[in-house]
Structure formats: C-alpha cells, structure tokens
Length: 245
Image 1 (cartoon, helix red, strand yellow):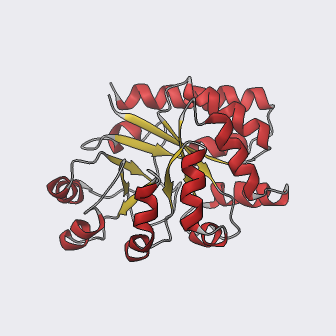
Image 2: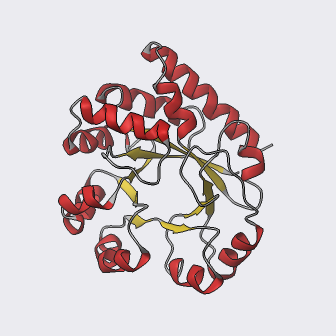
C-alpha cells in the first residue's frame, strides 16, 4: 500500500477549521499530515501555498496555534510540521524537538535547512524521536545523495523537479530513485506537482506521494467550510485510489 501525505496551511482559514479538516483527511485515506507553519517568504512554495501563508498571517496566526492544532489531531493522524528554518530557529529548535515529541508530532520538514545544518540538531531530534525529513533533488549527485540520506528517518522527500510546489513540471527521476535505493531502505515519497491527474505517474518507483497545492487551492475558493472539507476529502480519496491501482 502506497502512502499519501497531505499538506495544509495551519489556521487557514482559521484554527478550528484546520482541526476539522485534518480529522476529515485522516478518514479519507491520508496517512500523514504536514501542518504548514505560515511564513512571510515561503521560498520553496508556489503562489497557491504562498497566498495561504500570507492570509493566515494576516488573520493573526501565532506559533501557539500550531501547537494547539497539533495537540488536537496527533492522536488521530500522523502529524509533521512543515516550515522554514527562521521560524523554528526563533522558537529554539533544540527545545522545540522536545515540545514536538510531547504533543505527538513525529517529524519536521524544513526545506531551507541544509543537510549540514541539520546535523547540528540531529542529537536533539533523535533524543526526542522526531524525524528530520531528508530532501533529495534530481540535481543531487550520487555522492551527495549518499551523504544526505545516511541517517534518513521516516521517509525521504524526493523533490520531483528543481522548482517550487504546485508547478506542472516533470523530470525523469529514475536515476535519482536508484541512487537513493542504494543507500537506504527508508521509504521514498515524491512531492512537488502531485495532484489527482499526476499522482499515478509520479508514484512510479516510490512508496508514496506528498500533495499540498491541490488541497490548499480548495481552501482558497469562496466556498463554505463544509464544502472545502468535502472537496479536500474527495481529492484525498481519489489520489489514494490512484496511487494504489
């Protein structure tokens, strides 16, 4: 069974909605949930997620909201935090790994934190059983991949192309996947540009997909909260069926 990881922007449109949506996605085939931490300059994300980030911040998002949402959902769905290093650094990342463990968060996805910087915090991640998710891109050579995934935990985040989330680009990932498989048995999930139309093709050779913009685009629509949850749940079910058919 191949896995589906979903991304949503925390507290967008509001905190209680994030909790309701997370629980609905759990019942709709989502195996793990990335709670996006709103940030003013989300450099790895495309315009859809960037807009949701800015709207959440405009609505008054505070870091404590992330903690409250995580506490409310972590017993029902595997929960990870996805955010940018500056945010976690301000919260003292070493101490934050302990907080994450205490409220049931299993991993952190920090796309702008280089592998070398991650190693500085590795003991804290390990001590608190929180996985620092490793990123591999098609531009990484074999030797670099070996270093990046030398201690990969939970899953390896394979970036589908050199670009931003939500783009419709495509690259042949065969050699990159082969290189990853040489050095780790950790599951490999592919992200960037994954949606209902592309998921079946993107999942070839890997163990799961990571989907963000497809869900957040529904949250940006001028529809009711119930309609947003229904449409996201339908997307989740369609993608989970597609990657396992």
